[in-house]
Image (cartoon, rainbow over all chains, first blue to last red; front, side, top):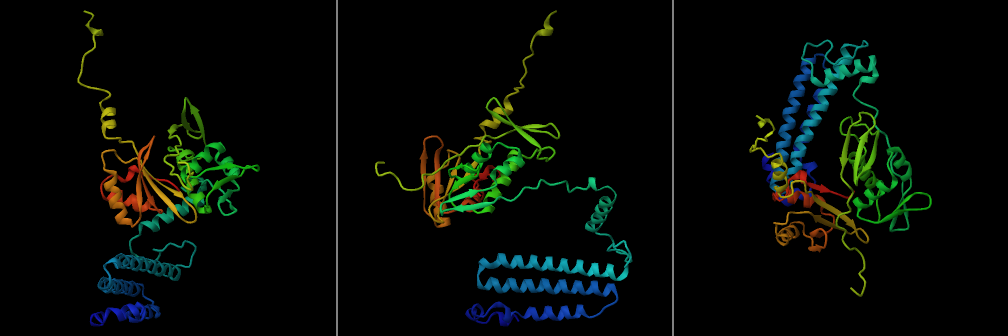
Length: 273
Length: 113
């Protein structure tokens, strides 16, 4: 195979890597082996190990090939290795699940049921959370996350963007629309205003995702309490400084004022200047 | 007898820390990397707040070479010098500045979407 790899580089490039790849066949074989009905758990695990070895070999193969081609591609090959690892893990977990199902069809579906192997951290964690959820659901870590509706964005003409539910979002955050607006405009480096129906009109083209990202940053900086992570806060202005006070835990912190920063001159210049 | 009220001079300076931090060449100063939309799908990237000691033109020269883009150093009346680059180079610039050791990673603020 190594000899094959040293065939003309051009050919290699011309042909996709897939037909050339000898390792794929290998994989298939291995998979077939696994799919054969095996009753003993240990066998399966052994085979998984085999698989892992072969996969790692593959990835090293890939590495070599790609290195010959271009040094730049090495990153991808690294990814490949990672991928292989992930796949392997996934496979392992699947196998384990199957084990669990096969052996204990009863109510407690614990992956280690029936086997005498060591527990894994994730499994034990999972179990703890299950118990916690059953007995008192309030204590589970997934606190009611603040759900915000995604920003609805329309295009007005080609050069302007309308943020439709701007007011709604401001209300859910309990923030002054002006404050949110200044932040958005400063971050996007454009100008804009509120129109008659209290929508935000921004100059420039922006996707909803962009708004979402900026709003997320706004919430992190100006809404969420640092201590308890609750969004139940109010923004107070005290002698020119903005302070964020949490309604839940009573803590307060100062927040940075919004500065527009440098805005380059875009567009046509006046003929005079 | 009334020596209790006398202030004992110590070498401890309560403001030493604060001063030292300030003199750390703007320890709290962020380098702001922004982007701005132009016409069509063109955009601009501005880098503001680099330390004054650096030679902006030299940085610019390397950046231009690295990212294959044009750029200038703009003199702003309030903010001093600002590097302006063509295209959306926010991530590139941030990486470059960190790798060149010009700014620490947590001192860079990337704005925009």
